[in-house]
Every structure is written in C-alpha cells, then in structure tokens.
Length: 232
Ligand code: ADP
Ligand code: ADP
Image (tube, rainbow, N blue to C red; front, side, top):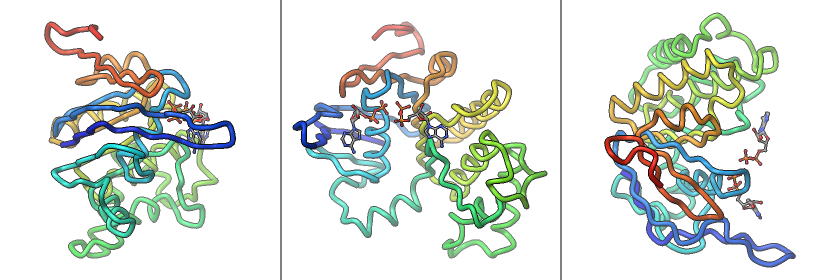
C-alpha cells in the first residue's frame, strides 16, 4: 500500500539545515494498522505530512496504492488527498460555522455517487459510531475538545478512503472514548483500510500490527506479532 524510498525531509532556517527525516525506507501493507511512536521533535508529524502530501520530500519517493504521489503536481495531490485519504489532525480543523453534522458531510460534498440524503444518512451513522448523534446539530465551539476530536474522526472516515492518517487521535479523549476510537480503527483495519496513527499511548502502540519508532529522523520497526514481539 505504502512504499517510502530513501525519503528525506530537510527544513532550512537561519540556523542552517535540519534533517527532520533521514533516508527512510519503509513499506506498509494494505490493511495494516501501524503506530508511529517516538519523542516530541523526532519527526512523526513530518512523516504523516509527507504521507498526506501536505508537505513534499527533499529527497526520495512516496508511492501509495501504486501511485507515486511524491511526483504529483499540487492540483493532483489535493484531489488525491480528498479521495484517497482520511486525515485526523492534532488540531481538529473543524469549520466553526458548520454544525458537527455538516462538518462530517463536507468530504462527501463533491461525491458524484451520493445524493444529499445519502450523504446525510452516512454522516449521521458516522456520528453514531463516535457516540455523537445527540450533538449533530451543535456547532464545534459549543462542544468539548474530546467531542470535537470525535467529530474530526467521523469526518476523516466520511469519504471511505483506503488510507487513514491520524496524528494523536486519542490525545484529547478520556480512556473510555479513546478505547472506543481505537476499536473503531481496529475494525477498519480488519476491513482492509490502512491506518497510520501517531500516538503517545503505550498501551495502544502495543496492540497494533506494528509500531514504527521514530528517532532523530530515522525509523526502526517494532513488531508485536509472532516471535518478533518487542524486538527493535
Ligand atoms: P514530532 O511530530 O515527532 O514531534 P515533527 O515532525 O513535528 O516531530 O518535527 C521534527 C523536527 O523538525 C523538529 O525538530 C521540528 O522542530 C522540526 N520542524 C518541523 N517542522 C518544521 C518547519 N516547518 N521548519 C523547521 N523545522 C521544522
Ligand atoms: P508533537 O507532534 O510532538 O506532539 P506538536 O508541536 O505537533 O508536538 O504539538 C504540540 C503540543 O500541542 C502537543 O502536545 C499537542 O498535543 C498539543 N496540541 C496541538 N494541537 C492542539 C489542540 N488543538 N488542542 C490542544 N492541544 C493541542
């Protein structure tokens, strides 16, 4: 599903150059649920931004579902992102002038396949999945941070994208809600969606298919299946 080859990202500023990612080679399979772990500043968000095509690599290539997205021009990458990815950001980026329901309907707005009625039905069903049906007509500023996060998760699932990218999706949630979202992701992975989730939660990072430890811009795998348990 995802192939990273010799991927590097260099940020330049007055102090010089900083290698946020250094020569990363990595494959992620379809239907794999991957956690990205590591200290603050290690390069986790940079990796997620590159996978989403929000930022472009300094060197190397990114192939997703057979498409070399690192070579796409800007207009194509935006279309690709809308169709092929569902993204949960650390800051939720909900539109404040829309209700929670309307926020979740938004990614489906350009769908040629769904009528407005179907879009609304699907959005309501997703809000139900994240236990927010009762707040469907509220505006983001009138619900809690955790509720906004759950709404952002529902929105990321709205377009039924094969790839879900999530930056600390359970960071603002209490343990019960966090567990609920984690199981939702587990089910999606079981249905064949590929999930890449940055997390600081050591429990969750051991219950996924694989954890990727990011350290100083480099990545090592930690497997949690079979005999590879706990090995770096
Ligand atoms: P993490 O998500 O693991 O906390 P990031 O990927 O956000 O790490 O950042 C990795 C490193 O790159 C950090 O040292 C950060 O300061 C630096 N960095 C991130 N974005 C920029 C930027 N736009 N300009 C310069 N440095 C950046
Ligand atoms: P990192 O990727 O290392 O967690 P960031 O620089 O991306 O660091 O974020 C800095 C901190 O701000 C993080 O601890 C993150 O959880 C927090 N944060 C980011 N966005 C929000 C938000 N909208 N509300 C509350 N906390 C946030």
